[in-house]
Length: 482
Image (cartoon, rainbow, N blue to C red):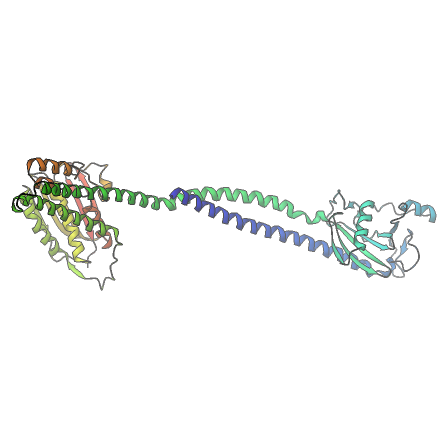
């Protein structure tokens, strides 16, 4: 399930990233294209306007000729060259033919690059300006920086004559145009569409950048998803382990109870008083099962949060520890243990007295349980610069270093021999030997330290463990002072 969740997480992130990059890059390319086309239309409009304001360039009547036209009274000796072509006839009227008729040669210096068609101009914003009147075309040499190939010009003019728009794009010719009607004809300026294709190169560059960014993002998503879902994976594993362990622990007392009931049914003719041991064993196992369920509920419910320091109850922690130490002193005496207590007076903390009492009891009970006869348990309560410090030390076999990090895990027992797996066997032996108390021998569930750790965290404290051959095992609880 988590693997599918991770795959969906990555797929959604990558899809959103690809969509955002596509929209952003498409917007950039469109803006680039619009900027180029606007510049083309602006240049074409300027060329047309510049031609329109010079009326001497535009013939008012008669056929168009290839002869140079003077600028008029105000010219400075320069001439505007114009060349005419007959479009749509049997052939094109070349400038050389005009020269033969008039006896003058056209200006041979005018040789601009061609634009439109399969060949694209390589001059910055090349413009070709023509005057079109009834199929006869004249190019304004002084206003042009390029020319249009003959076949392309025929197709372009034919297409323009059927359009009403004063400007536009001719995709079949690869030309942008701007048209301005003047008298019986029209001035038309052309520009190559290559000047508006810079966005294509930009699109390829952005595509490469986008693919690279998506590849990097994929790697980051893989790492981030593993990091983000790591706690979920651990929580899921712990939950599965918790359910398995809880089921196992609940199975043990139920087995004992069922075994005791089977014995009672087999001895139905006997009096209740004579079978009190089986009834007592059943009662003990039921109480243990109740305690286990209570512990699991405590661990399952959300940890309560403490109120502000001025409203949380103030607790005499010294008195609480002394009371619990006194209770477990008798347990230590019965187990043949040496019990030492050193508690400084007047140490107070804030929190829940009932839960803190349970925390201290869990530490003392753990020390008594894992100290062999003749061993020693030492309880000390004092303060340092960080707050109240409670240490519970017991002698005996040290805890293995591999077990220390897991001491506060749920259902974890460092001493694998102290389990309740033998309870069903004890129950069966009890059936044969008639000893119901054997089935109820004590065994830990591995929840005490986990609960103690949760209580310490709720009270903004820490609970740690250390174990060596020389010092024994020591649990240290630190809580902030009230």
